[in-house]
Length: 265
Ligand code: MG
Image (cartoon, rainbow, N blue to C red; front, side):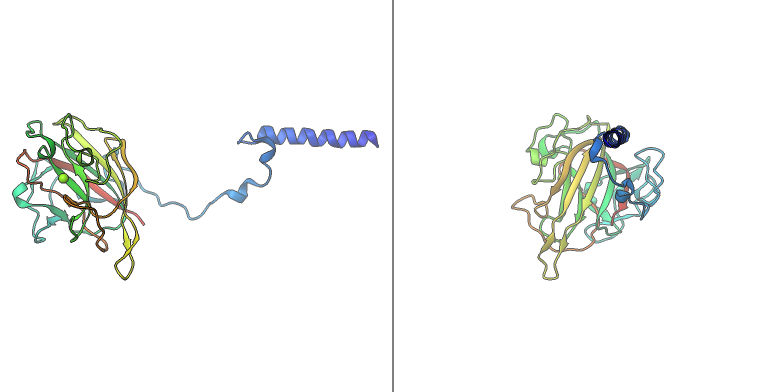
């Protein structure tokens, strides 16, 4: 009998030890049970074929500017044809033509956009290569929510207004600016705000942004539209265009290329 008990205990010990050794987590005795209990097999994620490079649009992207025309954009002022210049595959700001915005309206999305401050840039502070991408263009007092575009390469200004800032709301986590003449890349995840039927805010907007592959905004919660003067406020809106800013400063205009967007649920 004693032999039998010892044998059983020995077997249990050996088995337990073996299970522990096989556990992928290395947690030994904690790794009991059926691993299939925590496996998810459905629904299967959609297949998205990536671009040939990370700058090229994936298969499910809407190309907003691919180098040949500005057909996806209209004047923000009167919705007429966008008056910015397309040349050599680049879209260059024409300041006198004003802001431009997409024909399509978007809710949540992933945006890729490249921009270049000319090597010949002049001016300082906010008067040096100022533009901006409004992640949703609205009729509210701020005109939307601006991710700032500016030459921030050795160019001092208020830090919640430098490149990569959510204008006057969030300072970028880093200054990842390349020097004038080189291309800058923004990759942005935009979660649009939602509103209750009475117009009150239901859920705020969130932004995650990378500048040249460097995280500059980490899921920040917006306080409302970005404003030049005064505190941010929300004004209810639905799906909205993406807008590019024609800033009135006298410095030479910046250019864009490779702009695409993926709508998110
Ligand atoms: Mg701006």
